[in-house]
Image 1 (cartoon, one colour):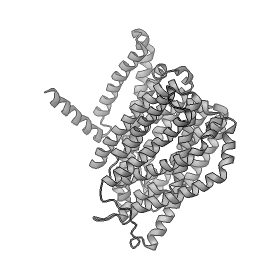
Image 2 (cartoon, one colour):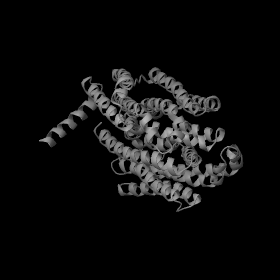
Image 3 (cartoon, one colour):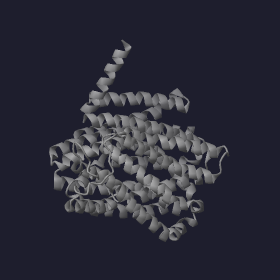
Image 4 (cartoon, helix red, strand yellow):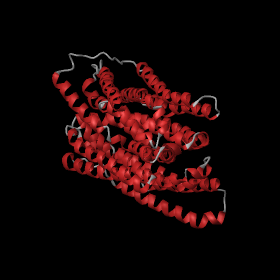
Length: 501
């Protein structure tokens, strides 16, 4: 786990730097200089592009991870990087044709409640292309166990460029047309940075070795690719929320949902790094039929994701009132508090249990996941359609939570029955008990200490987070929830001790 831990930490640092920038941009720039409808516009465009690009990729990202151990040797990669360019190009071509054919019906869905989207609908193919190949090059780097720079491009580079666009537009230095073009162009810059970085690593060849691609391998890749095209919908279920909200409730309400979801998305940040760097290792273990190793890795990944994501969610929730109090026009977005809680729990579930999806996809039983994905997709569509009409903003979040609960229950039941893979451990139960105790302490703090101290809301939040956060860290350490986390804490304490000396 050494290289996984090192790259995960570096990737997480890049992610959290992006989160810090995103926090500033989302809560102090977007809410000040953009209207709710304009925020909703950017969210719907990005979510639509991400959904379309995941379908156009034809499962390429998962195929690279699964088949890289079969292609690589000490001297060559035998054309897998070349395939990673051709398959998405074919998928994008099909998407572009479908976009031209169904452009008018799609516009009709949004014309009533989201007319602003119609003005920039023509930019969706370009944004989809950028998002598509940004992801492809990022995956190519991840199988080489190098994720830091691609993460910086995605999490930091895009946000900084968009920050410039927001400020230029906010100060009336550019028109809204130029602003939307700059917003879309930021993904193109990230795509270019990723390909330049990939070439800088060396030993990268996009020449396809036709002799190495036997008929059997081509058939296997083709079957897996077709399957993963459908499976890709599973990772994009949250995107349905904003797309349905935009169509049913308009861009303004989508803008409120966007700000709330930004807060909840922080919960998933560690998953983006640990998941990206652990998948190639799990894929290799599955290929070699080392199922004891797969079980060990699955438990470690799931435990650490559950521990970290749940504690992050806890810190967010105990400070939720302070967050909405400090952002400009916070009262206009306060209706999203319920979304933060519901969607935050959905993010905890997804980040903690998604390792099961990786294991199934890398195994020879990957096609068995198709019914599960079908159930997940249709339940997400059904729940969004029903819940948004009756519960509005909260309904979109509940749709994601309910869909995830059903999907992961079925998935992990199948993994245990067929592969004897069990991701659950005592550490996860300890984590649940810990968070329940911490929520009890937060309730007691709000009931007795907050009125007694009468502090400014920001100072009170900082003091509470510091004390309860320290209590959480100490409990994790002394209760030995995770040996790996304990080792990291020991090293940190040792470095602090040496620095003091």
